[in-house]
Length: 497
Image (tube, rainbow, N blue to C red; front, top):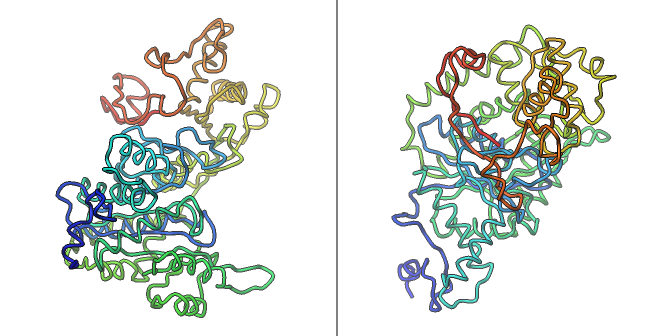
């Protein structure tokens, strides 16, 4: 069989072929490019920060970019995950509950994402099982390879086609060697083969150790981590080295030698003052130009667009760290032991601080330890108070006490989701005189349910995806405080959860 005949049969799902590579209608291999970012050594290295920063550089050049996060857990979405395990749940405009990395992509790229930009093992396996029941595999014994990997490739190609992306940025959750992401890695290997040379760029994000007892950087863990990636059939085109301090040329040379990656593509992604400085660091190292070369994208660059975008970004980042005064905002919740539980609040505070020239310090207060006797003392040094979202009765009374203190001491207050529901309860009890005011969420038999579940949700069973989710248009009544805060707008779009 000739190579042309073999490629023509890819995508057929029948007993005469071992291939299973479904493609969206009209999809043309090689038109869309892919950057696959994979972590080695350990999790939490910042794959999302790396991928979003690089995606921003290419978007600045006028290219259309589309990120996707592929998670290894069997949950259909992130909606029921404990914040202590995976940080906050980030809700997209279409209501999809996702990993917090999707928030990083939206903030860095300034574009709304959708369910197309997020997948989990649970989604992929559910799709495979559904197709099997529908007879979609035409008598084949359904296996991880090629059927599960085929669904992963279909997910990536659908995103590319529907967003008309020049480059799809694929963030593979977890670390090379995990059982959970093994079929993602295999699917990406197949994708590189099927799309053709110059269509897929593999990035290995690794970690360079710098033990304090030694006083020097060590590359062995990075070498072994990348070796695991190569054993999976993927040769990295770029290596990004996370480290506390700039990676030395000696270490970069070692990594280059052991990975067959040229020195100019071994990038030091060391700690910086802000994640918003990473993109400029990449640009200074020439990483964006290397990607253009690897994927043959130089002819799609809009230089004028890049110049304008770069100047706009420069004006933003030059204000980072230039604050002339500081304020303290108290965040009163029950997940305060893990800062990632409130990542969006932290980022919003950073953005406000840069815009206003103010250094925003957060004071984290566990509301399970708050009562009327200590609330004034615990919040005494706060210039403002945020009561964020949450679920259940634990810590609820502490939140109500924080809100009462804010109202009586006239401290600026922001209640978000559950936090604003607690504000309604506090006002009902202490101002309107409604004794027993509470919420049916944690007290179904409360005598005065000033907060109750939406009528259309009372018949919904289960926990996953059953809240009022996603972007909704909110009407602002003229003359109200909210109307003034939003500059007189008649409506704004807000995301609900």
